[in-house]
Amino acid sequence: MRFLGFQFPLFGCIAASVLGLVLVSCSGSKHENLFPEEEESRQQVLVPASFTEASARRLGSQVDSIFRYLHRKKGFNGTVLVTKYDQVLYKGAFGYADFSRKDTLTTQTAFQLASVSKQFTAMAIMMLQEQGRLQYDDSVQQYIPGFPYKGITIRHLLTHRSGLPDYTYLSDKHWPNRKIALTNDDALYLLKAHQPTIYFKPDKRFYYSNTGYLVLASIVEKASSISYATFVRKNIFEPLQMKNTFTYSSLAAQTEKVATGHLSGKRKRTPDYLDNVLGDKGIYSTVEDLYKWDQALYTQQLVKQETLAEAFTGNGQVSKKTEDYGFGWRIRQVDSGDTVVYHGGLWHGYNTYFLRNPKDRSTVIVLSNMTNGSLNYLKDLRRFLYPAPPAVLASQKSR
Image (cartoon, rainbow, N blue to C red; front, side, top):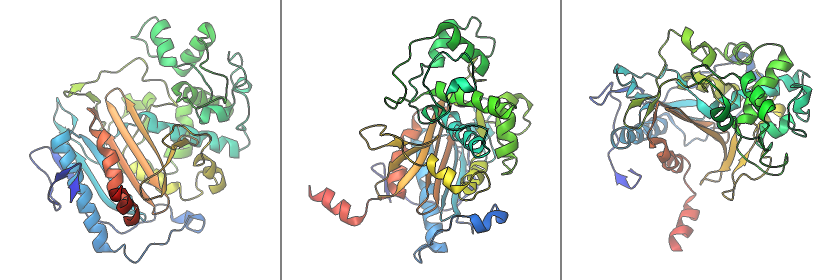
């Protein structure tokens, strides 16, 4: 096969390599329903006759070759899980959790999800909306009295249409001691105390806002009367048996393997005073736990499908590249014509990517603890998994 302009052979399954690779699986596995009690309400999908055990193994082997190439040539260090028609085609781990200790990654290693955390914050809001504890068009002031920006609703926060200023710039300027961790309450205090100018009037346009999701996490706390960390643990992680998923606030208590973030050049990223802020980031998980999350989104275990559908519905064009945004998910059309939902994340030595294609029930989950640009090549993986129809390719070549 040809990938990224290079020709390379397809590799079979092997256990390890001198490059520090641990390959957990590169063969298709039969679908196991993770949530049998939700079978009746589970969204069904028609599996075409062309998708056979042999074709699944072949596709898994091709994905294996792609990530081996990225590991060797582009410095990819992390874990991968790829599915199609609810079947795990491939899962693997490449490199180290900590380069100084040379401890090998596995698919049960937890990574900081960075902005992939936002979909969990959105889910918490959707659950509270179904419970009648809040409404999307409620103002922020209903939950955070004294919030200095008028006219912003929960919906504006979910869809990045609030215009709120960036809390990281604000805290860098006004937080007096960076040895003391900033909390969500601290960030809200800084917004109230200094009231930096809002970027634009609410709902005027899209502007990606980490501050908005920080505020959403605080609204979750006000509406539920428990901490954000407790809410997502009790209402999402525990029901889905995501046993290796947790928030930064409980990181120190973890005894299982957790990947350390690294910058380019394999330099370890030290903890930061902003790490403790939750909602926009701050959730740690594994590719295996995220697969449980992916599968749960085809059921009604967390919220009704009608509620979830709004999370996957665009609320205003994000860019000229026909990308849109729902509730915690980016939305776009891939070359095959399918509409996918996805999100990426980048934070202090971690780079993450999570894509779902409901049409063929495929998922691509990639977690890396090395911010060296290797995930920039995932657009090529996306083109490989979702190629344009032959007729479209032929017309492109004739131009």
